[in-house]
Image (cartoon, rainbow, N blue to C red; front, side, top):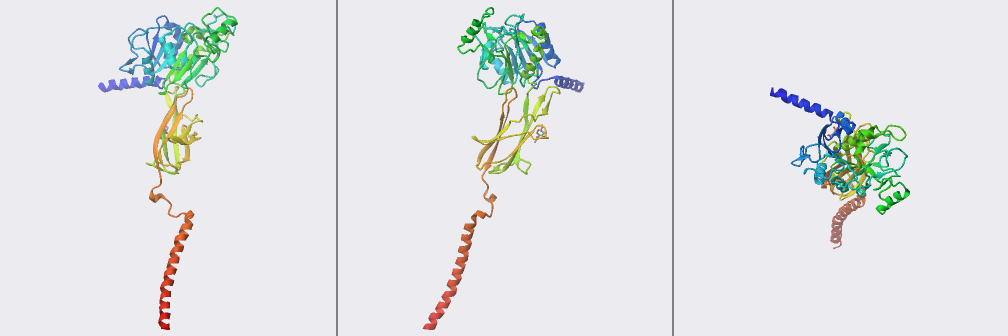
Length: 442
Ligand SMILES: *[C@@H]1O[C@H](CO)[C@@H](O)[C@H](O)[C@H]1NC(C)=O
Protein backbone atom coordinates (compact mmCIF):
# COMPACT_ATOMS: atom_id res chain seq x y z
CA UNK A 1 0.00 0.00 0.00
CA UNK A 2 2.74 2.38 1.00
CA UNK A 3 4.60 1.56 -2.19
CA UNK A 4 1.48 2.24 -4.24
CA UNK A 5 0.97 5.63 -2.63
CA UNK A 6 4.56 6.70 -3.17
CA UNK A 7 4.43 5.50 -6.79
CA UNK A 8 1.24 7.49 -7.28
CA UNK A 9 2.81 10.57 -5.70
CA UNK A 10 5.92 10.36 -7.86
CA UNK A 11 3.74 9.87 -10.94
CA UNK A 12 1.76 13.00 -10.08
CA UNK A 13 4.97 14.95 -9.48
CA UNK A 14 6.39 13.75 -12.80
CA UNK A 15 3.18 14.54 -14.64
CA UNK A 16 3.13 17.98 -13.04
CA UNK A 17 6.73 18.74 -13.94
CA UNK A 18 6.11 17.62 -17.51
CA UNK A 19 3.66 20.49 -17.90
CA UNK A 20 5.97 23.15 -16.50
CA UNK A 21 6.98 25.36 -19.39
CA UNK A 22 9.67 27.19 -17.51
CA UNK A 23 13.18 25.96 -16.90
CA UNK A 24 12.97 27.43 -13.40
CA UNK A 25 9.70 25.91 -12.09
CA UNK A 26 5.98 26.48 -12.42
CA UNK A 27 4.79 28.02 -9.16
CA UNK A 28 3.84 31.68 -9.43
CA UNK A 29 2.87 34.09 -6.67
CA UNK A 30 0.69 36.95 -7.92
CA UNK A 31 0.60 39.89 -5.55
CA UNK A 32 -2.52 41.74 -6.66
CA UNK A 33 -3.55 45.11 -5.34
CA UNK A 34 -7.14 45.05 -3.95
CA UNK A 35 -8.03 47.88 -6.35
CA UNK A 36 -7.32 45.60 -9.33
CA UNK A 37 -9.72 42.83 -10.30
CA UNK A 38 -8.40 39.44 -11.27
CA UNK A 39 -11.17 39.17 -13.89
CA UNK A 40 -9.83 42.24 -15.72
CA UNK A 41 -6.63 40.32 -16.45
CA UNK A 42 -8.24 36.97 -17.22
CA UNK A 43 -6.53 36.56 -20.60
CA UNK A 44 -3.10 37.09 -19.06
CA UNK A 45 -3.62 34.88 -16.00
CA UNK A 46 -5.59 32.29 -17.96
CA UNK A 47 -2.80 32.14 -20.54
CA UNK A 48 -0.29 31.43 -17.80
CA UNK A 49 -2.45 28.67 -16.32
CA UNK A 50 -2.96 27.14 -19.76
CA UNK A 51 0.79 26.93 -20.13
CA UNK A 52 1.12 24.94 -16.93
CA UNK A 53 1.81 27.57 -14.29
CA UNK A 54 0.21 27.29 -10.86
CA UNK A 55 -0.91 30.75 -9.78
CA UNK A 56 -1.35 31.72 -6.13
CA UNK A 57 -2.95 35.09 -5.45
CA UNK A 58 -2.52 37.29 -2.43
CA UNK A 59 -2.89 40.96 -1.67
CA UNK A 60 0.12 43.08 -0.70
CA UNK A 61 -0.86 43.27 2.96
CA UNK A 62 -1.66 39.57 3.42
CA UNK A 63 0.94 37.70 5.38
CA UNK A 64 0.06 34.38 3.82
CA UNK A 65 1.48 32.78 1.77
CA UNK A 66 4.92 34.32 2.44
CA UNK A 67 7.22 34.84 -0.54
CA UNK A 68 10.06 33.09 1.28
CA UNK A 69 10.46 30.93 4.34
CA UNK A 70 13.79 30.79 6.18
CA UNK A 71 15.29 32.67 3.21
CA UNK A 72 14.19 29.91 0.84
CA UNK A 73 11.83 31.25 -1.85
CA UNK A 74 8.43 29.54 -1.84
CA UNK A 75 7.71 30.32 -5.51
CA UNK A 76 9.64 30.10 -8.75
CA UNK A 77 8.24 33.39 -10.04
CA UNK A 78 6.60 36.43 -8.48
CA UNK A 79 4.28 38.84 -10.29
CA UNK A 80 3.77 42.19 -8.57
CA UNK A 81 0.60 43.80 -9.93
CA UNK A 82 0.78 46.43 -7.24
CA UNK A 83 1.71 49.57 -9.15
CA UNK A 84 0.24 51.99 -6.61
CA UNK A 85 0.70 50.08 -3.35
CA UNK A 86 2.74 51.97 -0.79
CA UNK A 87 2.68 49.55 2.13
CA UNK A 88 3.27 45.83 2.07
CA UNK A 89 3.32 43.04 4.62
CA UNK A 90 6.71 42.71 6.26
CA UNK A 91 7.92 39.96 3.92
CA UNK A 92 7.84 42.13 0.79
CA UNK A 93 10.61 44.68 0.88
CA UNK A 94 13.06 45.81 -1.78
CA UNK A 95 15.71 43.74 0.01
CA UNK A 96 13.60 40.58 0.07
CA UNK A 97 12.80 40.97 -3.65
CA UNK A 98 16.48 41.32 -4.48
CA UNK A 99 17.09 38.29 -2.25
CA UNK A 100 14.61 36.30 -4.36
CA UNK A 101 16.53 37.16 -7.52
CA UNK A 102 19.75 35.84 -6.04
CA UNK A 103 17.91 32.55 -5.35
CA UNK A 104 16.94 32.23 -9.03
CA UNK A 105 13.35 33.45 -8.60
CA UNK A 106 12.10 35.66 -11.42
CA UNK A 107 10.08 38.84 -11.01
CA UNK A 108 7.55 40.74 -13.09
CA UNK A 109 7.06 44.21 -11.67
CA UNK A 110 4.58 46.88 -12.73
CA UNK A 111 5.17 50.55 -12.00
CA UNK A 112 2.95 53.61 -11.93
CA UNK A 113 3.26 57.34 -11.73
CA UNK A 114 3.17 57.14 -7.94
CA UNK A 115 6.28 57.01 -5.79
CA UNK A 116 6.20 53.50 -4.27
CA UNK A 117 8.70 51.00 -2.85
CA UNK A 118 8.75 49.39 -6.31
CA UNK A 119 9.73 52.62 -8.06
CA UNK A 120 12.59 52.97 -5.56
CA UNK A 121 13.52 49.38 -6.27
CA UNK A 122 13.63 50.10 -9.99
CA UNK A 123 16.39 52.65 -9.42
CA UNK A 124 18.53 49.84 -7.97
CA UNK A 125 18.24 48.17 -11.36
CA UNK A 126 19.54 51.21 -13.19
CA UNK A 127 16.11 52.49 -14.27
CA UNK A 128 15.56 56.19 -13.69
CA UNK A 129 11.90 57.04 -13.02
CA UNK A 130 10.61 60.52 -13.89
CA UNK A 131 9.29 62.80 -11.13
CA UNK A 132 6.10 61.37 -9.51
CA UNK A 133 2.84 62.12 -11.27
CA UNK A 134 4.20 62.34 -14.82
CA UNK A 135 2.64 59.73 -17.10
CA UNK A 136 3.68 59.18 -20.69
CA UNK A 137 1.71 61.38 -23.07
CA UNK A 138 1.48 61.37 -26.83
CA UNK A 139 -0.87 63.25 -29.12
CA UNK A 140 0.05 61.12 -32.12
CA UNK A 141 -1.51 59.39 -33.91
CA UNK A 142 -4.90 61.14 -33.85
CA UNK A 143 -7.31 58.85 -31.97
CA UNK A 144 -10.37 58.93 -29.77
CA UNK A 145 -8.50 57.66 -26.68
CA UNK A 146 -7.03 60.09 -24.13
CA UNK A 147 -3.46 61.30 -24.68
CA UNK A 148 -2.17 58.93 -22.00
CA UNK A 149 -3.41 55.80 -23.80
CA UNK A 150 -0.85 55.29 -26.49
CA UNK A 151 -0.33 52.71 -29.23
CA UNK A 152 3.37 51.81 -29.20
CA UNK A 153 5.30 50.20 -32.04
CA UNK A 154 6.94 46.93 -30.96
CA UNK A 155 10.57 46.74 -32.11
CA UNK A 156 12.34 43.61 -33.26
CA UNK A 157 14.00 41.82 -30.41
CA UNK A 158 15.34 38.31 -29.77
CA UNK A 159 12.88 38.16 -26.86
CA UNK A 160 9.80 38.72 -28.95
CA UNK A 161 8.04 36.89 -31.77
CA UNK A 162 8.34 38.53 -35.16
CA UNK A 163 5.76 41.05 -36.37
CA UNK A 164 3.83 41.82 -33.21
CA UNK A 165 1.32 44.63 -33.97
CA UNK A 166 1.58 47.84 -31.91
CA UNK A 167 0.54 47.50 -28.26
CA UNK A 168 -1.61 49.81 -26.16
CA UNK A 169 0.32 51.30 -23.28
CA UNK A 170 -0.54 53.65 -20.52
CA UNK A 171 1.66 54.39 -17.57
CA UNK A 172 5.01 55.77 -16.72
CA UNK A 173 8.21 55.72 -18.78
CA UNK A 174 11.72 55.41 -17.37
CA UNK A 175 15.14 56.46 -18.55
CA UNK A 176 17.78 53.75 -18.77
CA UNK A 177 20.93 53.95 -16.71
CA UNK A 178 24.26 52.53 -17.76
CA UNK A 179 23.98 49.00 -16.35
CA UNK A 180 25.10 46.46 -18.97
CA UNK A 181 22.57 43.95 -17.63
CA UNK A 182 19.54 45.94 -18.82
CA UNK A 183 17.59 44.43 -21.69
CA UNK A 184 15.39 47.15 -23.23
CA UNK A 185 12.24 45.57 -24.67
CA UNK A 186 9.79 48.37 -25.45
CA UNK A 187 10.72 52.00 -26.05
CA UNK A 188 8.49 55.06 -25.93
CA UNK A 189 7.36 56.52 -29.27
CA UNK A 190 9.62 59.31 -30.52
CA UNK A 191 6.86 61.92 -30.25
CA UNK A 192 5.86 61.03 -26.67
CA UNK A 193 6.93 62.69 -23.45
CA UNK A 194 6.37 62.47 -19.71
CA UNK A 195 4.40 65.35 -18.30
CA UNK A 196 2.27 66.17 -15.30
CA UNK A 197 -0.39 67.92 -17.34
CA UNK A 198 -2.51 65.92 -19.74
CA UNK A 199 -4.62 68.76 -21.09
CA UNK A 200 -1.81 70.89 -22.37
CA UNK A 201 -1.20 69.78 -25.90
CA UNK A 202 0.82 72.59 -27.40
CA UNK A 203 4.45 72.57 -28.42
CA UNK A 204 5.19 74.35 -25.13
CA UNK A 205 4.22 71.26 -23.13
CA UNK A 206 6.68 69.15 -25.10
CA UNK A 207 9.38 71.76 -24.70
CA UNK A 208 8.75 72.01 -20.93
CA UNK A 209 8.90 68.25 -20.59
CA UNK A 210 12.17 68.02 -22.43
CA UNK A 211 13.69 70.80 -20.33
CA UNK A 212 12.58 69.43 -16.98
CA UNK A 213 15.51 67.13 -16.46
CA UNK A 214 17.96 69.45 -18.12
CA UNK A 215 18.86 67.25 -21.07
CA UNK A 216 15.58 66.30 -22.63
CA UNK A 217 15.55 63.16 -20.50
CA UNK A 218 11.79 62.77 -20.30
CA UNK A 219 10.88 62.82 -23.95
CA UNK A 220 11.45 60.72 -27.00
CA UNK A 221 12.40 57.22 -27.91
CA UNK A 222 15.31 56.83 -25.51
CA UNK A 223 12.74 56.35 -22.73
CA UNK A 224 11.93 52.75 -21.87
CA UNK A 225 8.43 51.44 -21.21
CA UNK A 226 9.18 47.76 -20.62
CA UNK A 227 12.70 46.82 -19.64
CA UNK A 228 14.23 43.55 -18.55
CA UNK A 229 17.22 42.96 -16.37
CA UNK A 230 19.19 39.75 -16.15
CA UNK A 231 21.19 39.18 -12.99
CA UNK A 232 24.57 37.49 -12.83
CA UNK A 233 22.75 34.43 -11.46
CA UNK A 234 20.68 34.37 -14.68
CA UNK A 235 17.44 35.16 -12.85
CA UNK A 236 15.35 37.73 -14.66
CA UNK A 237 13.21 40.69 -13.75
CA UNK A 238 10.94 42.72 -16.04
CA UNK A 239 9.77 46.23 -15.18
CA UNK A 240 6.65 47.37 -17.03
CA UNK A 241 5.58 51.00 -16.85
CA UNK A 242 1.88 50.22 -16.48
CA UNK A 243 -0.30 47.33 -15.40
CA UNK A 244 -2.95 48.08 -18.08
CA UNK A 245 -0.58 46.63 -20.67
CA UNK A 246 -1.62 43.19 -19.35
CA UNK A 247 -5.35 43.88 -19.18
CA UNK A 248 -8.15 42.26 -21.18
CA UNK A 249 -9.33 45.73 -22.09
CA UNK A 250 -6.10 46.55 -23.96
CA UNK A 251 -5.87 43.05 -25.45
CA UNK A 252 -9.34 43.51 -27.01
CA UNK A 253 -8.95 47.18 -27.93
CA UNK A 254 -8.50 47.81 -31.63
CA UNK A 255 -5.72 50.07 -32.87
CA UNK A 256 -6.56 53.48 -34.44
CA UNK A 257 -6.31 51.86 -37.89
CA UNK A 258 -8.92 49.26 -36.91
CA UNK A 259 -6.60 46.25 -36.61
CA UNK A 260 -6.15 44.12 -33.47
CA UNK A 261 -3.58 45.15 -30.87
CA UNK A 262 -0.52 43.07 -30.08
CA UNK A 263 -0.91 43.21 -26.29
CA UNK A 264 -1.83 39.57 -25.76
CA UNK A 265 1.12 38.23 -27.73
CA UNK A 266 3.52 40.84 -26.39
CA UNK A 267 2.83 40.15 -22.71
CA UNK A 268 3.02 36.41 -23.38
CA UNK A 269 6.49 36.83 -24.89
CA UNK A 270 7.85 39.06 -22.14
CA UNK A 271 6.55 36.70 -19.45
CA UNK A 272 8.07 33.75 -21.31
CA UNK A 273 11.39 35.55 -21.20
CA UNK A 274 11.07 36.70 -17.59
CA UNK A 275 10.10 33.21 -16.41
CA UNK A 276 13.11 31.65 -18.14
CA UNK A 277 11.30 29.86 -20.92
CA UNK A 278 13.04 31.51 -23.84
CA UNK A 279 16.67 32.40 -24.54
CA UNK A 280 17.79 30.10 -21.73
CA UNK A 281 21.15 28.47 -22.43
CA UNK A 282 23.48 26.35 -20.37
CA UNK A 283 26.91 24.78 -20.70
CA UNK A 284 26.54 21.00 -20.42
CA UNK A 285 30.19 20.18 -20.08
CA UNK A 286 33.66 21.21 -21.16
CA UNK A 287 36.61 19.00 -22.01
CA UNK A 288 40.21 19.63 -22.99
CA UNK A 289 43.06 17.37 -24.01
CA UNK A 290 46.20 17.23 -26.16
CA UNK A 291 45.60 16.71 -29.84
CA UNK A 292 45.48 12.97 -30.68
CA UNK A 293 44.70 12.08 -27.06
CA UNK A 294 41.31 11.52 -25.42
CA UNK A 295 41.63 12.32 -21.73
CA UNK A 296 42.74 15.51 -20.04
CA UNK A 297 46.36 15.33 -18.90
CA UNK A 298 47.30 16.28 -15.36
CA UNK A 299 49.35 19.13 -16.75
CA UNK A 300 50.24 20.58 -20.12
CA UNK A 301 53.73 21.26 -21.40
CA UNK A 302 54.50 24.58 -23.07
CA UNK A 303 53.78 24.62 -26.82
CA UNK A 304 51.46 21.59 -26.61
CA UNK A 305 48.65 21.48 -29.17
CA UNK A 306 45.46 21.64 -27.07
CA UNK A 307 41.88 20.80 -28.13
CA UNK A 308 39.12 22.51 -26.12
CA UNK A 309 35.50 21.40 -26.50
CA UNK A 310 32.23 22.54 -24.93
CA UNK A 311 28.64 21.41 -25.33
CA UNK A 312 25.84 23.98 -25.04
CA UNK A 313 22.09 23.33 -24.75
CA UNK A 314 19.11 25.62 -25.01
CA UNK A 315 15.88 25.10 -23.09
CA UNK A 316 12.96 24.28 -25.33
CA UNK A 317 9.68 25.30 -23.67
CA UNK A 318 7.58 23.29 -26.16
CA UNK A 319 9.06 19.92 -25.19
CA UNK A 320 10.19 21.21 -21.76
CA UNK A 321 13.63 19.70 -22.32
CA UNK A 322 17.15 20.81 -23.12
CA UNK A 323 18.20 20.59 -26.76
CA UNK A 324 21.73 20.93 -28.20
CA UNK A 325 22.21 24.48 -29.44
CA UNK A 326 24.66 25.47 -32.17
CA UNK A 327 23.41 29.01 -32.77
CA UNK A 328 26.24 30.90 -31.10
CA UNK A 329 28.74 32.21 -33.63
CA UNK A 330 30.55 34.82 -31.57
CA UNK A 331 31.83 32.85 -28.59
CA UNK A 332 35.45 33.20 -27.58
CA UNK A 333 37.83 31.07 -25.57
CA UNK A 334 40.57 32.69 -23.54
CA UNK A 335 43.63 30.95 -22.17
CA UNK A 336 44.67 33.25 -19.38
CA UNK A 337 47.32 33.64 -16.75
CA UNK A 338 46.42 37.02 -15.22
CA UNK A 339 45.98 38.29 -18.80
CA UNK A 340 44.67 36.30 -21.73
CA UNK A 341 47.74 34.85 -23.47
CA UNK A 342 45.47 33.45 -26.14
CA UNK A 343 42.02 34.69 -27.17
CA UNK A 344 40.43 32.76 -29.98
CA UNK A 345 36.98 32.08 -31.42
CA UNK A 346 35.19 28.97 -30.20
CA UNK A 347 33.09 28.09 -33.24
CA UNK A 348 30.28 25.54 -33.48
CA UNK A 349 31.30 22.26 -35.09
CA UNK A 350 29.26 21.75 -38.26
CA UNK A 351 27.25 18.56 -38.20
CA UNK A 352 27.47 18.05 -34.44
CA UNK A 353 24.66 19.91 -32.70
CA UNK A 354 25.61 21.78 -29.56
CA UNK A 355 29.35 21.13 -29.91
CA UNK A 356 31.91 23.94 -30.05
CA UNK A 357 35.60 23.14 -30.51
CA UNK A 358 38.93 24.82 -31.15
CA UNK A 359 42.56 23.64 -31.34
CA UNK A 360 45.39 25.96 -30.37
CA UNK A 361 49.03 25.89 -29.30
CA UNK A 362 49.75 26.49 -25.62
CA UNK A 363 51.89 29.60 -25.14
CA UNK A 364 55.65 29.32 -24.64
CA UNK A 365 55.17 30.28 -21.02
CA UNK A 366 54.72 28.12 -17.95
CA UNK A 367 52.38 28.83 -15.05
CA UNK A 368 48.82 28.24 -13.86
CA UNK A 369 46.48 28.94 -16.76
CA UNK A 370 42.70 29.02 -17.05
CA UNK A 371 40.41 28.15 -19.93
CA UNK A 372 37.78 30.90 -19.75
CA UNK A 373 34.51 31.11 -21.68
CA UNK A 374 32.48 34.18 -20.73
CA UNK A 375 29.65 34.83 -23.17
CA UNK A 376 27.17 37.61 -22.39
CA UNK A 377 24.62 38.80 -24.87
CA UNK A 378 21.55 40.91 -24.16
CA UNK A 379 18.52 38.75 -23.49
CA UNK A 380 20.34 35.41 -23.39
CA UNK A 381 21.46 33.57 -20.27
CA UNK A 382 25.06 34.34 -19.50
CA UNK A 383 27.45 31.45 -20.15
CA UNK A 384 30.51 31.27 -18.00
CA UNK A 385 32.99 28.50 -17.31
CA UNK A 386 36.51 28.49 -15.95
CA UNK A 387 38.87 25.48 -15.87
CA UNK A 388 42.29 25.76 -14.29
CA UNK A 389 45.24 23.80 -15.70
CA UNK A 390 49.00 23.99 -15.01
CA UNK A 391 51.38 24.46 -17.93
CA UNK A 392 54.92 23.32 -17.12
CA UNK A 393 58.28 23.43 -18.92
CA UNK A 394 59.39 20.09 -20.44
CA UNK A 395 60.90 17.59 -17.98
CA UNK A 396 64.62 16.83 -18.31
CA UNK A 397 63.90 13.74 -20.40
CA UNK A 398 61.36 15.47 -22.64
CA UNK A 399 63.91 17.58 -24.48
CA UNK A 400 65.05 16.30 -27.88
CA UNK A 401 68.26 14.25 -27.71
CA UNK A 402 69.89 15.61 -30.83
CA UNK A 403 69.62 19.17 -32.11
CA UNK A 404 70.78 20.04 -35.59
CA UNK A 405 71.25 23.61 -34.43
CA UNK A 406 74.00 22.34 -32.12
CA UNK A 407 76.26 21.12 -34.95
CA UNK A 408 78.99 23.74 -34.16
CA UNK A 409 79.22 22.32 -30.64
CA UNK A 410 79.14 18.71 -31.83
CA UNK A 411 81.87 19.51 -34.40
CA UNK A 412 83.90 21.27 -31.71
CA UNK A 413 83.65 18.32 -29.33
CA UNK A 414 84.36 15.72 -32.00
CA UNK A 415 87.27 17.65 -33.50
CA UNK A 416 88.78 18.21 -30.03
CA UNK A 417 88.51 14.47 -29.30
CA UNK A 418 90.09 13.52 -32.62
CA UNK A 419 92.75 16.19 -32.16
CA UNK A 420 93.59 14.91 -28.69
CA UNK A 421 93.77 11.36 -29.98
CA UNK A 422 96.11 12.33 -32.84
CA UNK A 423 98.21 14.50 -30.59
CA UNK A 424 98.55 11.74 -27.99
CA UNK A 425 99.42 9.22 -30.68
CA UNK A 426 101.99 11.49 -32.29
CA UNK A 427 103.41 12.49 -28.94
CA UNK A 428 103.86 8.95 -27.76
CA UNK A 429 105.18 7.65 -31.08
CA UNK A 430 107.41 10.69 -31.66
CA UNK A 431 108.92 10.48 -28.22
CA UNK A 432 110.13 6.90 -28.80
CA UNK A 433 111.73 7.82 -32.16
CA UNK A 434 113.49 10.83 -30.62
CA UNK A 435 114.99 8.72 -27.83
CA UNK A 436 116.27 6.19 -30.34
CA UNK A 437 117.91 8.99 -32.34
CA UNK A 438 119.52 10.38 -29.19
CA UNK A 439 120.76 6.93 -28.32
CA UNK A 440 122.21 6.53 -31.84
CA UNK A 441 124.13 9.83 -31.81
CA UNK A 442 125.77 9.04 -28.47
C1 LIG B 1 28.66 16.56 -22.87
O1 LIG B 1 27.32 16.89 -23.13
C2 LIG B 1 26.84 16.40 -24.38
C3 LIG B 1 25.47 16.97 -24.60
O2 LIG B 1 24.69 16.89 -23.47
C4 LIG B 1 26.86 14.89 -24.39
O3 LIG B 1 26.41 14.41 -25.62
C5 LIG B 1 28.29 14.44 -24.15
O4 LIG B 1 28.33 13.03 -24.05
C6 LIG B 1 28.84 15.06 -22.87
N1 LIG B 1 30.26 14.74 -22.79
C7 LIG B 1 30.84 14.37 -21.65
C8 LIG B 1 32.31 14.12 -21.70
O5 LIG B 1 30.23 14.26 -20.61
